[in-house]
Image (cartoon, rainbow, N blue to C red; front, side, top):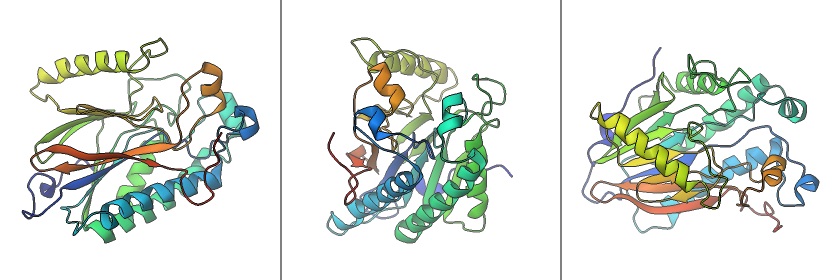
Length: 301
């Protein structure tokens, strides 16, 4: 069965008092990768148990912010982005050697964690729209491919399994395209979503923004030719949270690892982005969730 639907409720506000439709951006979890804190000078630690704690806390903190920190919160539903690199994968031998367990066992465990958190979102917000794209770490082949790029990826299987878990619940809608990028519209804001591994560069003094903005301009040119221009591009991949009016680059749940330290990439605490889509004003209330901010979950480096 194909899961490529966009529900009607994301286009028109249900009532005048609505705050909007919240979005939680989940990407770059790298589930079951192991990061030894002694090998990153104490900057981070990551394993199976920590991954579950950080992911659960991210969902719980998002809900707490939306439901308990605003007066009389009213929402039309909830938008969840799953945007790739949810798995550490086997694309490098060192990952295969150090991952917590084989990737199919990871898939079973992560499916259960995501299922429960999505169920909680449905119970709280009433309706949930989930947009799914694979990353580069979940691919079956060591080298990136263009043909069947989506299907030869463990994350596509994870998304399909989750969609089947909710197949009898009409409150949950999955958008799982055959392409590694998708477009959709929430109220009057048009989104373009892709993992971000198609963009290259970012190691110079200008950082990641220059190649991303250049790549976004190219994508705008391509999609304008078929009359699908977009207002906001949402990507992950670079492990650095950036939230602009027309661009969202997500952070990582995993945090700093041995490779990033070796490459000299900037340090950033594990974090994910969230915001609210307003019927008239677009993206509002943009904020970050520190995934390791649960009690006892973070020690300053």
